Length: 407
Ligand SMILES: [Zn+2]
Image (cartoon, rainbow, N blue to C red; front, side, top):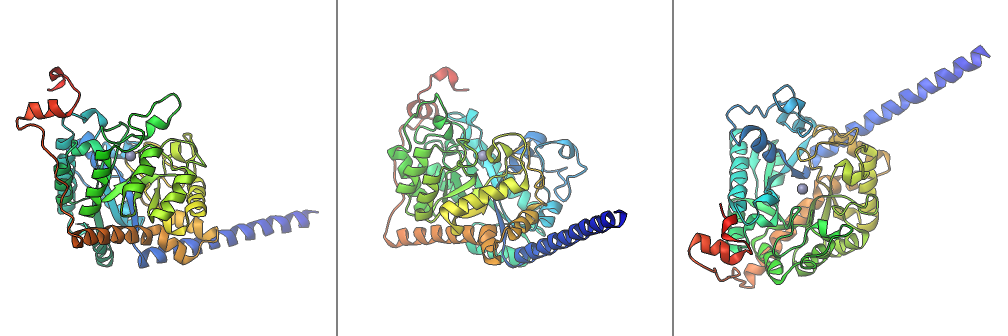
């Protein structure tokens, strides 16, 4: 009897060792894939944390390693530094120039400019490790050079202050996507909260001006980001857009019915549009609760793959904008573990390459091609009438506010 138990224990031990060896092999395979193709993440909120913690002053910011730095080390919102980005083999990061809804009708344009300035200063301060990138080809070049391709995404349509002129200037400053809303409606687009029980739509999707914003983004070569928008806004934007769209940080509604996630019918429409969902890791969007795991994130990725197809998935973890992370995906160093898990689930190397970065590069190149085609068609910038010349009058004219709300 003793011997039987002994053999059983030995057997279990051997199985465990073999499994561990397999896991190690798969992690090595994942790392090899990420050396060949760039790993691109669609959304990181570090710039907002720098605003919160350091008032945008980079003087004492030790981005190389924040694991022992105050207040980063103890903050639940901090998951990113250069050392961990390297460990996680991240090749390209869209840094979010996030603009809170409380600034709508007030200083949202100023905030967007300040956050873009911050991202540009952060990149310029680390020329060995980072490079500002504004093209799809730039991502591939930076990956070969071993520098983190740093791209700018503006989060919140109110950042353009209802002005196509501002939108064009954000593009000039390097912004390559605009998230059409954050958690507030703009005068031209509904956000995802209107889809929640008891809420009523403001417009019911995109207004005519909202469609003009999308077309102007197509003309510029700026990606339309539909994370945070309502489902009718998603559908309107995909109808209006001549180019593929992105969801920079959203997950699957079928697995967690958060209004921030993408329902299956929109996923099928997205496949026809050619765009991608970059999967968010936020537990509230993954398991609809405070706890989730790397395996739960893999399940969302598999679901989106099943419904939309392998060409329409990417990664948009949302690090530094979330204060909870899945077990196994605690910070930006953990991405290779996720790819190892997908290899364990039978994903081919080619599939993993698409998820990691090839899909986003394809979308970005398609957006650039639409820009070139529209230029070839002689399509000019959309000209809007500027309501008034004096500043206060202009604000007053454009927005339904009383003078007392103007600071
Ligand atoms: Zn967000």
